[in-house]
Length: 190
Ligand code: ZN
Image: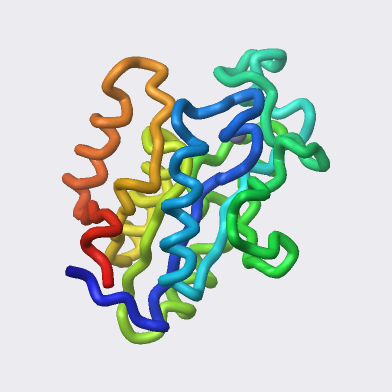
């Protein structure tokens, strides 16, 4: 069991419309929203990362990149999903991938979160991570947090993978575990 305290911190990765039911929908993404809402009840300190791209972002197919256009600044697709139990205007948001010529999968990549977060983790240097997608932004975020010396609990029932190639999600979980991440579910927290 993991005892959640008021010092604990939840990092919710990219729960944006485009990844849930938009242009780059992750299979099963909507099903983790109620689970994330339960974690949000338990963990009061939290931040939400958002993929936030200019229209001509280098990751888009039109620019020779891998992905359909998604999470463009100012669009509905870039907004956090409305079924999350939060006030989207009152939460800490971490924006990534904001430069046209550079992609960023990790919530720590070019966002300044690496400077801010460690000092916010008073006492226990650990975070809980959930969101989308297991094999891209969740993985990159988790691996970066571990590099910063933070102990990372990944909420296995609150992540979903893109699985461009079958098995990508499981491979990503193995990589995170090998790096030291601990995978838990709702049944493990109190
Ligand atoms: Zn993106």
